[in-house]
Image (tube, rainbow, N blue to C red):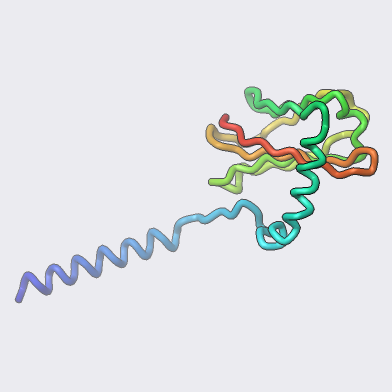
Length: 139
């Protein structure tokens, strides 16, 4: 009987420890507006099709502590945005505005980064059309 009580107490402590650990765990979503973003999924797919129809795709590369975007038509962008997301840690997400007319290569500094998987997406408008290009990269 004594061992049953001791086993029950240890089991209760074990479950309590698991609850405390799980409550303290940081859970990052890919986007804070995840549900609204998913509702606009068809718009995103149209932008991806537009980008796929281009004769040349943008080139995005990681360097030591920066991201380089190279594209011959970069200077003709009406507007553009580069979003770098770390799916496992939202604190490492970055967002940059593409400067129109600044040449065919732009470099953006990453102030905080760690090695791992990143989702890099480039959204832009050019000649009245919207485009979306996405790339998974391991740094």
